[in-house]
Length: 184
Ligand SMILES: [Fe+2]
Ligand SMILES: [Fe+2]
Image (cartoon, rainbow, N blue to C red; front, side):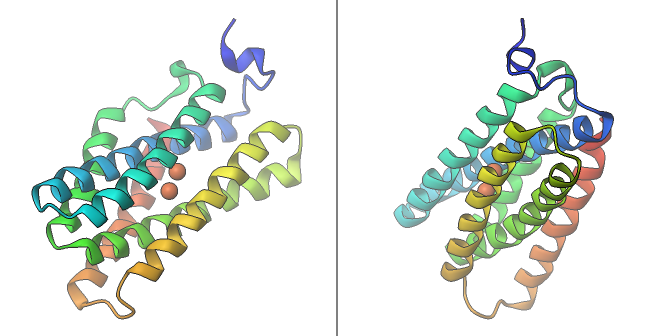
């Protein structure tokens, strides 16, 4: 018997299945964002950035593990390889420009993810019946908010134009990725 069925939470209605597919894809991407940051930070010997990315990356790996428990492999996105590559680049590219660019990027990503989870939390609160899933999403969202606040504090108070453009691209790229991951 699969883990999801044992937990008594499968199968999901179509809406939740699609949302969880995007959550699983997103947490996969998040793990790889920090792998990308660490790869570049090691080259640049930026110990502070390595510590930041390792700490955040461990939380994202835990989110991914938790979602994999409640969301069976057969329902997951077929685009996990592209999500890993996109995640890795989303971490590696700003890391080339220094830790402040990484912090601004994480702020942008987590601002998006916080909202993404909030919509699902609202849905589950209204419709009920998936208490365990609701608690899981609330827990993940709380970590994302913590990540966002930490990154915001570490980022420069005002960002140069190029970095603002990059962060806007990260936000809209995340939105497009969610649209795709819900379906494929
Ligand atoms: Fe996460
Ligand atoms: Fe996060």
